[in-house]
Length: 190
Ligand SMILES: [Zn+2]
Image 1 (cartoon, rainbow, N blue to C red):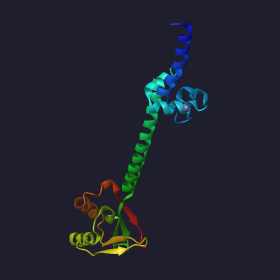
Image 2: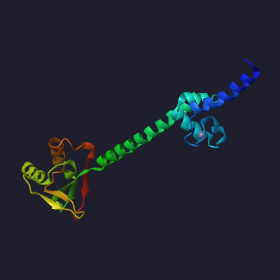
Image 3: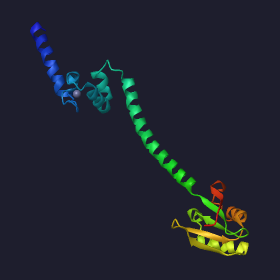
Image 4: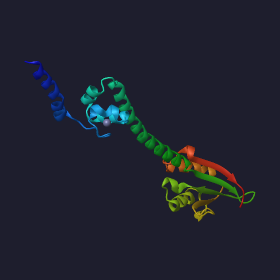
């Protein structure tokens, strides 16, 4: 082998390599080995890492691949967390909404000796108000009817001082009504 032949081989080698192995960067469009001159190095590295980890390691031997991969994992995690946060927020909202469902059993004095009980919110627990009113009338042998309240929703008005009895009956009859969501209140004649 002469010196001339050696030189010719050395000159040919890079062009052959470029023709067969060339990978153009999806960010800067340069061949990936020129990314460091593109001014978008971080983006270029990210792109190449996602496309071909082995080529990335070869092109950027100084970059800590593990650390970079961790970054990518972290990014995925934060996306997941976002989804989870969304789901959590939704669940919290629903729990809040559920907790806000209140059955109010209000004792209202009509006169010194006569009072009625206003039952509000029973429908929020899927109870048929007419059936409930009938049940109260039967159980307590008193008048009981469904009446529209000023808020435009329906209350059951029970004629009689039976607040505690209604409380107990509700718990016995409709287990879907949580005890902590039943409010016993007192009100004056309207
Ligand atoms: Zn690039």
